Image (cartoon, rainbow, N blue to C red; front, side, top):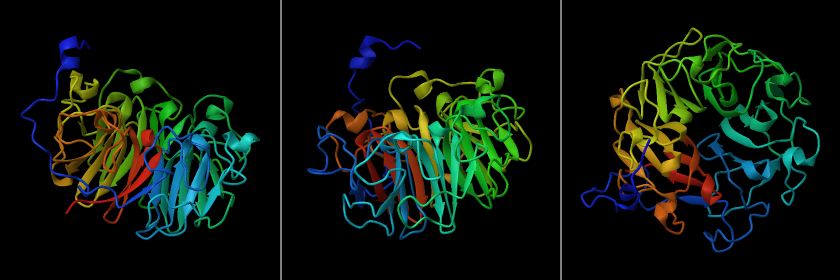
Length: 395
């Protein structure tokens, strides 16, 4: 793709109209992770009960909590027993480090049932917590929510036991291995894992109860023993390049295929390996992959490295990460290349830029990596701003 120097210098189009807000235009109800003056990014990101370093995932288990945050750069999981009501509220407990002042991969030791190495995706409900422990190439499951420091996980997927940490267990890809697994989603009685390094999505029809349980279904590859980019065929409706998040909208399955700058949509939850998506959002057809549909400036129908997706009420939220914005697509109008109708983080659909090319503001975004939803609240991992936002839907 070629971009002219003139295009890089052009100001946003004068005719660009403000977009209807996806989330409360007053900004997030609660901001977590920023300390001191609140938005001074020159402050060293030292680990504490109130600080975060590049969080990539967060989820409320219920409308009033608990809240769990993957504090990715500090290699730990932060937890609030109740939904925080005040900005910059400190976490109540953590998993992955001996205390709030420490950091380091696997707590600078060997992997175990309560250590983490670049945790990313988080999924939670009152009876289960799931965390993508990406660089240990595993998924950790707690049967029942942890309530105190360093309570060990009950189940590990991707490894034979809690001591394993090698990609694909140090061998070939199989139904029971993982490689840079970045996203996890609880869907009905089952579990979906975006196994990004193997360029596939794995589905367990029931939440596993034993270590190393193999997946039941694979998408993005024809078989469980394949890991080719885009399924080895080039961009189409079956393959993936960098799947990062998944969500269920009614009966439809949605996958954020960030490497191909699109959301893949299956109208029904697939029941066979390698099933093709019915359509995609972010591109005009299933064979295209350029960011912003090969334009410098975005619009309402394009995406640039979307790393997150979630369902909030009647809208699909997409974390359009490299455009530093959140898009809202009406669920009843999802179709090939459908445009978003709502927006947060930018003033209009043609604008882009980290924090709108300014200092961080309460309602701005810088590379939002993760988005989940609970009730009327979006939980946004605003990774580039080292914070998590609890942000209610616009009325």
